[in-house]
Every structure is written in C-alpha cells, then in structure tokens.
Length: 302
Image 1 (cartoon, rainbow, N blue to C red):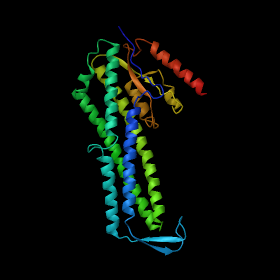
Image 2: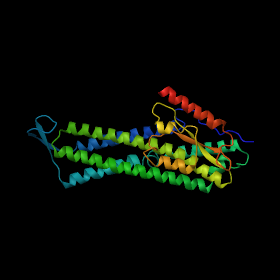
Image 3: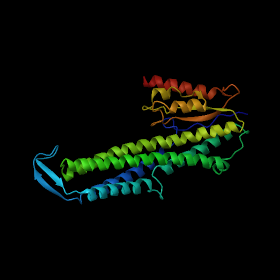
Image 4: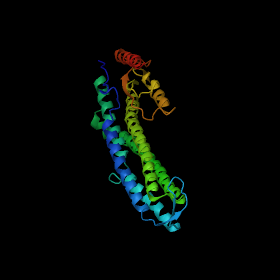
C-alpha cells in the first residue's frame, strides 16, 4: 500500500531550519562583537600627533599616526589571529556555522528516512542504521568541508577589509573616533555577509540531505522523484513559488540551484515521492493539492 510522504509543517519556511539559523546568527554576532572590540582596542594603542590642516571628512585637524613596518605587521598579524580564533576555532576548535549545518543535514536525513519508511514497506532502513552508515559519514564530511571553505573565505575577506580600513584611515589622517566608526561599519558589513552564508549553507545542507537520501533510495531499487515544496511567503521569488507541488528529478533540481543565485537565501525544500517507471507519482493527489495551494498564493499576492 502506497501512502503519502510527510510534508513540512511550516509553509513559510519548509526547510524547518529556523533554530539552526538562529543559533548560527548568535555565533556570528558573538564572534564579530569580539573582533570589533579587539581591533578597536589594539588600534587605540597606536600613538599619534595632531597637526593642523583639513583632514578629509574630519574637522580641521589631521592626525599623524606613529607607524613603522613593525607596528603595521603586528597589527595585521593580530587581526588575522583574532579572526581565526573567534571564527575558525570558536566552537570546540571548529568554525562557527559548521555545526549548525551538520545538524540541519542530520535532521533532514532523519526526516527523509522516516518519510520514505511511511510511504512503503519496501524501504527497510531505519534512521539509526542510516546515521551510523559509511555512506552517511562520507556525505556529512563533504557538508563540513563545504561550510569550512565558505567560512575560510569569509575570514580572509574580513581580515583584508579591516586591515585596509585601518591603513586607509590612518594614511588619510582620520581621527581615532572616525576610524573606530569605520571599523564598526565594516563589522556590520561582515555580519550581513556571514548571516547570508549561514542562511544559505544551512538550508543547502538540509536540501543536500534530501537529495542524497533520494539517490540512495533509488540505488536500493525504490523509484522516486522530488516533490517541490516552496516557501510561500512574501519574500519568495516567483520562480521558486511557481515550482510548488511539481515533480522533478535530482538533476533538474540541482541545475535550478546552480544558476541565477537560486540557492542564496532559499527556504524551499523537496520531498521524495514514489513514482512509476515513467516518473509519474503513484498518487497524484498530493502534488495536485500543492499546485492548487500555489495558485491561490499567487492570486493572493497579485
């Protein structure tokens, strides 16, 4: 007997990764607050002389900072180590965000296994067996590596931005207060960037678990396709919402996310659904119901 897959309960955020994203955002705020505090405090230790003249954007005073190559190198090394410590080694020696992406992958894997087990008795793996399996360990290692690389890129860019901001501000004779504000502004930019990375990578980990489980299920002889479940909210892109309730292959889904920045900030998800040898759902009731729901969403948004 074929039963329906288990659908996400939250139609506005069907990835159901809100908790993981909130925890990651807290980690980001904590790390960047520490970076801002440390950089400003170290900068304030640099001596300066006040000279007359007109500093660009400041009052009628120019500040001449007492710098040499040693001071600059020491400042840059301090920034690099501080960022590395608070971002890349912050959570038990691991980068921030990575653990939350792992958790999203694990929970999505468990949900996918439970959903497939509910649809057909031919699916015999349990959640515990899956999470302890070698294929799962390999897959989650790839998730960790991907997020680690993203956070490494974030730290490199943040380090460069802060070092450049300090060097530029001191070279132009900005006041200490003005330079401190410039640092806070760059930290604000870094926070937005980090939150975008966290949101994207955590949701990507969630979806990757679904795709990986779908692939393994088919390798085990059970035919499935991916039922698209859109995030029907005010911020959902029309190209995403229009896919609600439609059936796709893994390749079609992957190709969609690989272009036009579709993976960035996306809260849509997919669910494996049983199909016949022609790729048609064994029960068309659920896809039809979701497509009707999508049509109503578009009418209400118009």
